[in-house]
Amino acid sequence: MKTYAGKPVYHGIAIGQIRLLKKEKKSVIRSRIEDVEQELTRIKEAVNEAEDQLKGLYDKALLEVGESGAAIFDVHQMMLADQDYQESIQNIIQTQQVNAEYAVAVTADNFANMFAMMDDAYMKERAADVRDISERLLTILMRAGAAEVSTDVPTIVVAEDLTPSETVQMDKSRVKSFVTRYGSSNSHTAILARTMNVPALIGLEYDEDIDGKKAIVDGFKGELIVDPDEEILAEYEERAAQEEAKKQLLLELKGKETMTLGGRAIRLYANIGGIADLQSVMQNDAAGIGLFRSEFLYLEKDHYPTEEEQFQVYRSVAETMAGKKVIIRTLDIGADKQIDYFELDKEENPAMGYRAIRICLDRTEIFKTQLRALYRASAFGNIGIMFPMIISVKEVKQIKEIVEEVKGELDEMGIRYGEVELGIMIETPAAVMVSEDLAKEVDFFSIGTNDLTQYTLAIDRQNAKLDNIYDAHHPAVLKMIQMTIENGHKGGAWVGICGELGADLTLTDTFVEMGIDELSVSPSFILPVRKKIREHS
Ligand code: PEP
Ligand code: MG
Image (cartoon, rainbow, N blue to C red; front, side, top):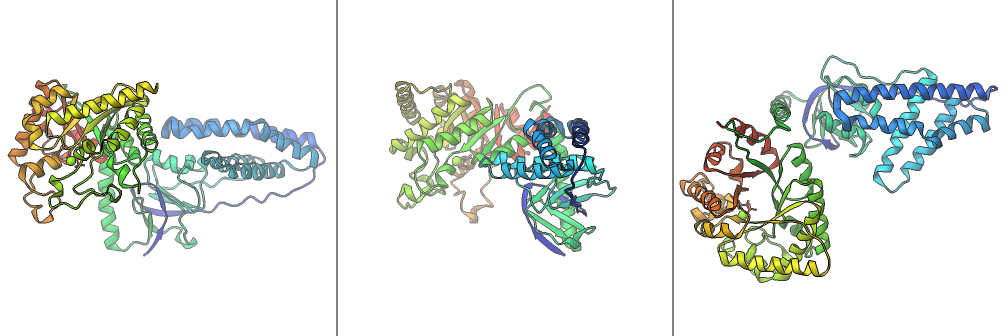
């Protein structure tokens, strides 16, 4: 058994036989020609044939991987038709009186180098595309065959690099993974792997003798395990089966509504800690973001994030979600989340101490900076703001006054902002008890069951010794949830759950019966919860 490390560009587990692709480098010879016109006709015909091939590949990719995966062959057609590219080839043939193959090879090198030297990451990637279309022309001119994979066993394709044309020609039903020595996260092979939903690794240094061997691709750790021993193989077979079951769920439920059999729609949102989680939000088809824990923005810095820094992040999330709801929770530090530059005093009882909204209402400059960034970002999407650790109506009124001040300042500066729903987290028993009054002040409630359990049961959620009695299913917690939903509705607020309990499939039916409007869960739980809701009668 030997393990090689690479960089995963798409996750998943694959088990199969390695097929090492060795592309024969076409050796292009420079030869002088007599008949320039004939050579120009040869290249013209080759371009026409390449165009036909690309049209065919586009149609094939469209059927197999959809429009976004097929788009690359559109790009290739455009590059092939590019006047500068074609003129360069013709010019070399005419001025140097050389063969078309040589003119294509030189043009390919020149154009690829030019793209590779560009600053823009997207343009850099085009170097590989110029090489790809030029290879196609050379193959036609020289009548050589391209590297192909047709196989009847599950296959892990390993290569120096792969062109989109090569990947699209592969038998998708057999190819379980791509592994390359070169390539980048933005390369089309990586994009295609994501679209095909198979794991892919790049930057992996392999030995040539791996061809034909049994192997595992761990697209989570970024490993290629060649000749795995029995135990490892059994472990991965089990994981692959679990992954496969998840994929099936994904295929079945993606794009479907989150609605009970009785026709009640529940909003199913995702919890995130930052921009990096957005890919998983999209992939799992969340209807929005129900909890963006903004404190991670503060935790990853060694200074207070500026208004501009925050604005860029909130705006990017709002834009990416393209009109879907994005609920951002204001800073929730203290207790288990400590940040040095806040210089918070050490406390006897941090969970019940100076934390979250208590800090914000005390150090209002920090709070106002965040609110300004949030309101500015609201012009770019559908933002909601919620406030953590609320215990009283008085706090909510204070918050609303500060929000009005911030909006007034933005108005004065002529900065536009959108409609923003304001909500609070219900995570203290106090908030539950006064929830009917709180509901009149806000648009929504989001129940933070992690803290609500801790404060209801008086059990520190951080204390491992008490793990066995930290019971979020305790009837007291469930009654609190029920009461919050009823009171929220009475006061005109919609009610969701964003604590971990929201993803507890044994309680989904209970929450639906209680009248919950929204559930916000980790992205990987979206589809299992959707399945459960769709089965609710
Ligand atoms: C909660 O308390 O349930 C919650 C969602 O917030 P956090 O886990 O970030 O405290
Ligand atoms: Mg909490």
